[in-house]
Every structure is written in structure tokens, then in C-alpha cells.
Length: 475
Image (cartoon, rainbow, N blue to C red; front, top):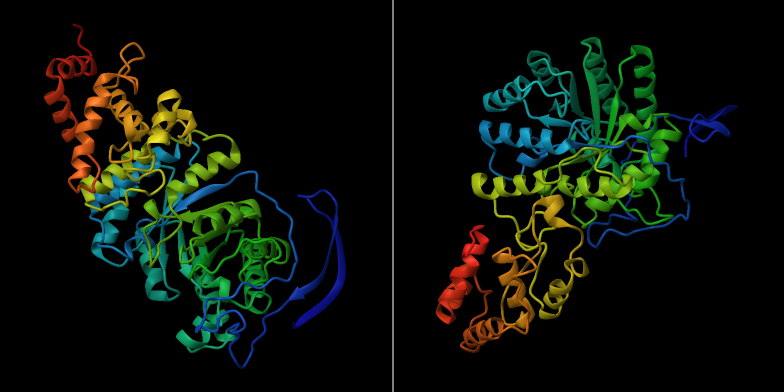
């Protein structure tokens, strides 16, 4: 490792309130050949997880928040949203984030007329949160768009792995660094806050490029007085959270180093992860816990390839970590899911946590039996109060008497006085009819309509009575 020794600096840490020592100054390593970490990424086998058994301290910031990329990364893997759809989703993001602005920002493309129209419409809403920001490539032409749209903060693509610098851009590290710093300086001169997207950070030479680049940004920030954010982009989802895992794949190591070696404050560090290895949520949560104030997400996790970190997941994670929703309206998660399906035509996989049709629906008879006694036994939390989603039961060949009884109670919204027990005759008679369906070869769950028709056939007067009760009428 090429490092320059400097006189030891000992100072009182403002965050830990003890003396700390800084002995090294990391400088750019302008290598002749790219560092591709072939010991991890040989491409012919599954990427390897290596450990160096070095652990860094957990240090969750006092304030953490969520930023949104639904209208940028989220549009790179599906048909573009219309302007009207973007505006409606933006309104829901505002409501979901609450008055404290837990959903702090949302980023947009600026390239097409439609993109710019959407930006204008969202700006006209006058919301403080989420703030409208943009995303550009590191060139002057793109930067002119930012100034034209009067956006106060823009993301800038600054790829930091040698895969991108050498193989994609055909540059040396020095040439890439100079190019990036040029566009950042232009943003600062125009009074625009840059947000540097350190693309492919989990395959980058951390001490040879990432930290030296971050140190240069810190110097520019100190000189200009304008904050410069660093977004740690786990472009291929290689991030790992295991204790003692080695860089460049260590999520906690990446965040710690930016704070400790480059002295970037938590408020200017953000994590952006993809879900290629099913780690998007835990990687984002770990970034929070180890010092990043921001995690970047998209609604329903829609994004490149396997997608981004789902925004709704991090809303729930925030409440778990902080012990409070801090004014967020979690019920909007259900509104967003319904809007995607009914207005946009996006099919949400039924088992998707928090937003899927069946995320709090059980088919197992033994689970339904527990729900009859107390829904807390088999429901993750009070989904009806928090998400406007009452726990449900899908009736099929495995539901049993308990499942049918629970369906009756929930479908007709029966009070305790009128609730059906699994021992009631009506449950047994419906089960007989349901069993006949599956004996004849049926494989799908029974619909509400089919169950209502069975009930009508068995006891029309009883069905009408429950219908009246459900509609709030009295006998």
C-alpha cells in the first residue's frame, strides 16, 4: 500500500469523546494495470467472500433518512412512468415521509422533455421534502441541464473501480480523478451541491482510489463551503455485512473508512445498493448502523436487474431501528402498492413483504386456528392499523375448519358477538363443499366470490344476515 507518513496528529474525537490518532495520508495510486481483485471476482465462479478479521465500530448517526431513486434508477428496468404517474407517486412519497422528511430527496433524469416536465410539475408542488434532485454523467453538456432546471443538488456519475476506469472509460486513475474533479468544481462554481456517485465501490481499490478521491472532495468542500455528498454505489450487489469481512466488499468498512480516513461527515454519506445477491436491505441497514445517514431506495425495489433496495422495506427498518415512525404515514405503503397495480399495471408478486397481496395471508389450517384465537400469534405486527391491511386467510385444501371460520369473520367484519367458531355447523358445511372441489382436481385457492356462492347455496338466510351486519344494518 502506497501511503505517505505524516506527523502523528492526536485530537479529541467529537463523536467518541476520546483521543484519536491519525498517522497516514492516503494518496492516489496511479497504477499501470487495473486492480480487478481476481482472488474475489474470477468471473468463472461465484464471487468469493474473504475475511481479514478486522472489525470497525458501529456508529449510527443521530439522524438517518431515506432518499428515493424511483424516477431515475427505477425507470431503467421498466417502461417509463408518465408525467402524471410520477407526480402522483411523488405526492405519496411526500405523505409517506411525513413532516420531518424522513424521505429526504428524490432524484430525476433530465434528458427528455418528459423528464423535465415531470421535474417542473413536482417542483411546483412546493414540498420541502422530498427535495427534487437530478442525476447526470460527468460532462459539461449534462451539467448545463442542471443549471437550466434550477436544481440545487445533482448526482454525478464518478465510477471508482478499475473495471470502469480502465475497461469502460479507457482512462488511468489520474485521468479519471482529474475528469471527476473538473465537473465537481464546475458545480461548486455554479453554487450547486454535487452528489458523487462512487459507482462500483465494492470492486474498487479502496485505499488506492476511493479514500484519496474522497479526501480530494473533502478539501474542495472545505474550500468552497458547499457540502459534497458521497453515494456509495454497490452497483452489482457485492456488498457483504459479515463481521470481519475484507474490503472492498465490506459495507461497514466502506462507511467507516470514509468517515475515519477522509473525514466525511455522516450527513454526507449515502448507500445505494442492488439486490443481486439478496442483500439489498441488510446492506442498507448496515450502512445506517455504521455511519451513513442516507440510504437510497426505489419504490417496490424496482431498478436495474434484480432491483434496488425497496423503499418500503427501509421505512419499516427505520421504525425498527429508531423505535418510532417519526411521523411517517405507513398506511401510504398500501396506497402506493394499489396505485402500482391499478393505475400503472405493475404486477406485484403476491408474497412480497408489506406490499404483496398475500404477505399477511395464511393458507395453513394450524395458522388459521391460531388467528381465530389471537391474530398476534401469526401476524408480524398490527398490519391493519399500520398498513391498512387486515390479516387474511386464503381458503384451499389446507385451510381446514379454522381457515373457513376465519374467512367468514374477516370477510363479513363480524364483531365478537357474531363471530363464527370452527366448531359451528356453517364452517363444516362449507368445508365439505370446498373438499369436493379439491377432490375433483382443483389446485388454486377459493375466491371470495366462490365462497360467498357456497354460503348462499348452503344457507341463504344466514348469508343475508351476515351481509346486513357487514353493511352496518340492524335486523
